Image (cartoon, rainbow, N blue to C red; front, side):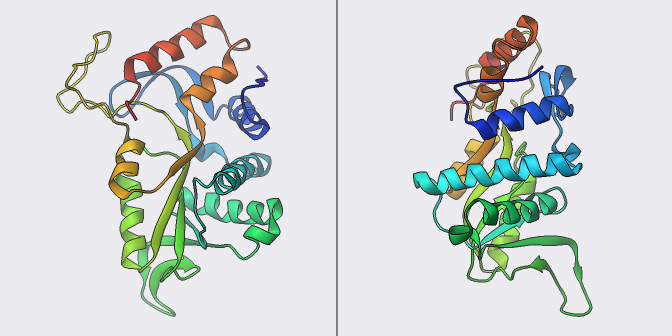
Length: 245
């Protein structure tokens, strides 16, 4: 299956094709941690191969560069990758950004945290650029419940840095699960939460949260090349769970 869409930028199409061919994005039936039955599953941990790492770092870089050009994202000094998945994503993306636009991003730094603070040598739990006084963009794979990204924000705040943006690989665009429970096949309660995890983070911290792909992008890319069954199931999932933000 090869995606080709005039509606998507070339880097999104290339990224989506890589995700599908490497089975990073799978179509089928998957039970999420929330208990929802999802027609697709995304595993960014599979971007471990050299060519795939180049693809995802280029997609992050192109998304960031586009956000800077449009004014959605302000100036920043450091890409921060939360341990562990964010570490290779941030470091690879810094290098790719310098290739995309050396004049604008050539002095950009990366930084990441240790899970346990180092007690010898220079000590601390930050590796790479010091964060104090720096403007920081967080790079991660996805935001689900928002717990991991909030931990990263706490680290950034404690280090005396300024959070200016967040970028993830995929925005599922779906509302947070109803804490009162959800039943498959039934319409959601009108009083159930309607905001997504990304929407909550965006509202709480007042910073842009960008993504390489959204569920809308996946459906757009698969139209005409995916099976009718897969596309219909994705569209129904979007209709049922789409967030208000």
